[in-house]
Length: 116
Length: 111
Image (cartoon, rainbow over all chains, first blue to last red; front, side, top):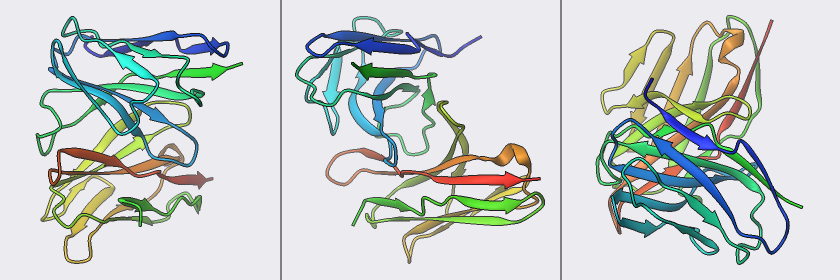
């Protein structure tokens, strides 16, 4: 079955630690995205990638880093520089990038990160 | 003013009721519009795209009003399984491509 997988489902981090969230897709989509969701707020874009070896900052990139070495994979690292990392992190992919008008984004099941 | 605004609710309705949600957007050059559904502690999933002429999918009807800059979602004959949060999504290309998600409207359908 085609889809997007994220791991782990739950992640606990101590302050000062870097952690990496995994996102893999087998939909053959070019574009991939990372969002953060906080209670009472809409999804906010952290980073996106429209093609392998290229990625762009979203609205809240500070304290995060990504890589896109393979089309299928777009891991997100939450660094110790991110001051309020506790949130629900969602990875998504789409056939076209942000410039495509009616372009559904497919989401993975998410990772809940809690800083202890 | 937020770029995309939704009434957070919650909307509490009985089974069989008709319920409508609105979503306003600030950018008059917005190009495409969507409604996503998000179940509790799950990922969002596309419910329907919203086209200029309006569109219907079973019990769900979506409409776009460009003059007043809002989209709407109407759910007829509500089912218990419709209980979820409904996210409004707007895309535009002015000043760079952007996809903006609303904070969502919570719906509870009761027996």
